[in-house]
Structures are given as C-alpha cells and as structure tokens.
Amino acid sequence: MFVVDSDRNLKGIVNVDDMAKLQKKGETSVDSVLEENVYITTPETSIADLLPIALKANYPVAVVNDDKRLMGVVDRATIIAEVGGELEDITPTDLSSE
Image (cartoon, rainbow, N blue to C red):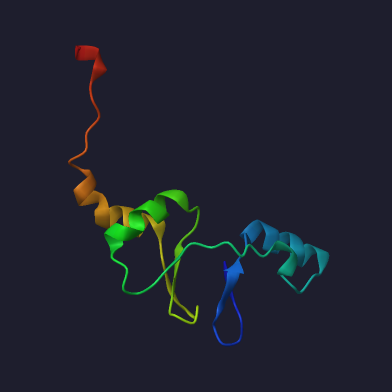
C-alpha cells in the first residue's frame, strides 16, 4: 500500500503483511515498516519508458507530480501488457536444432 500524508504527498510504501503485524501489535504508526525507496514516474512518462521499472519493481509504480503528490498508480501487469505487442517480436533461439 502506498502511504501519503494529509496533502497526498507520497511518503513510501508498506507491505500488507507488515500492516497486519502492526495491527496485531496494536501499533497505529507505519513508520517502522515504511519503505521510502519507491519506484515513481510522472504523468508525462510513456508506457514504453516504464517497462524497465515494471520489470524491477515488485509493486505498482506510483505516478506523482513535481511535488511528489500521489496522482495514481500504474500496475506492473498493465505496463507489460501495453508494451507486450512490441515484445512479441522477440523470440528465443531454439538451440536443439543447431
């Protein structure tokens, strides 16, 4: 889950399992499990340019403005599917026939 402040400025991301553990402990702050190294992009970034990020990230890519205000998210599968047409031309080499 993406974490934002009251102005929707992106602060980081937390794992759902970590959130459940915090809830069981009765903790109300996510600071102890907040991951601040997050893959982000801007609305102007093309889907094709997001492919390298999508292949590295284990979560959706946050779309932010210049002030790091969260504007939305782009799911990894969406990025890969959109670029998929370009990837269909890439085929593996059949080494058994050589």
